[in-house]
Length: 154
Image 1 (tube, helix red, strand yellow):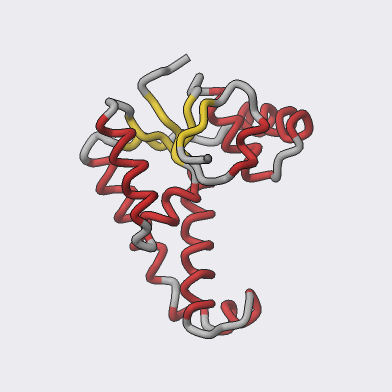
Image 2 (image 1 turned 135 degrees about the vertical axis):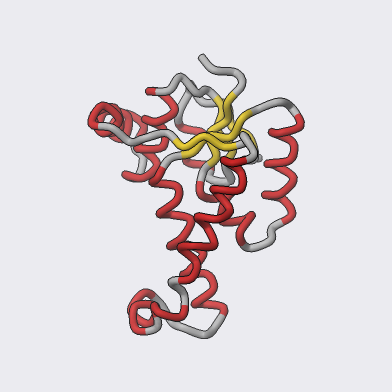
């Protein structure tokens, strides 16, 4: 198992993008302890969508259908999140792991075994496939997975 890597879930990246101090401190602590941050494309997708949705709600939109009607006002967030990921990656602080056919097979098994939502199953599968035992998250669903050490969930 890799003790030097910590998988960063979308809940943490969403917090970072929205200026949450708790998320900032969690990442800072992981880096100060010598961990390299790891994520995957599923987390990018979740982060962009949830930041879009949160900002749309703050702007007074009333759900996904409203967001679709006004999507052009929020598509700049793709680039904003990409730039945040690039900045961390270019500094040598973030690695992006691919989602492979093997990842999907592992996700199918683990999703059923631990009763996880599909994206969470893919995240857990990425951890298992890459021998990552640590996950930075505010999502308590990952507590169901005995081989993961949780950073952030109290």
